Image (cartoon, rainbow, N blue to C red):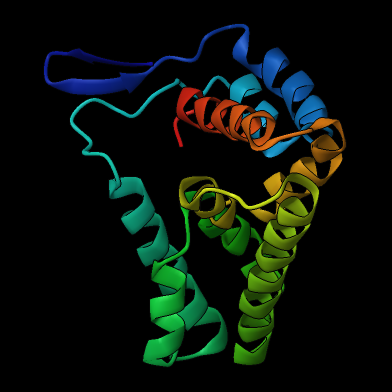
Length: 179
């Protein structure tokens, strides 16, 4: 907590913060990314004054800078592919890039992401019939983590409305957690 007295800035620590951080760190390791953000006390919604969509552009920009430092200068086509990723996909890429050693690792990751998304849409189409363009587009922006959750949940679905309800719940969770 910051306070200003006589033009000086001082930092005060809450007495309970040290104990709660140790317990939180142990629990966060075993939770999904969404649950860990909620547990860490991240405020829901977008910060005041931040326009919608800015976090996606800012996230892509940051990931592109990190990728350039990690694997070297990226071709324009690769940069374009990264910029078109959803916020959830950019977050997944941000975690994955820590393991990259060269540009081929990034190319492989992007190709695998596209293959997973195409396979998910194909499986859903086989199971539920033709998907509306809006539902198919929403599936196309899911992260790898969300695709895994989708694979588990889809056994209970009998029609596109079930899928749409699940996708809406994912969107609401992301908005509540500030994505």
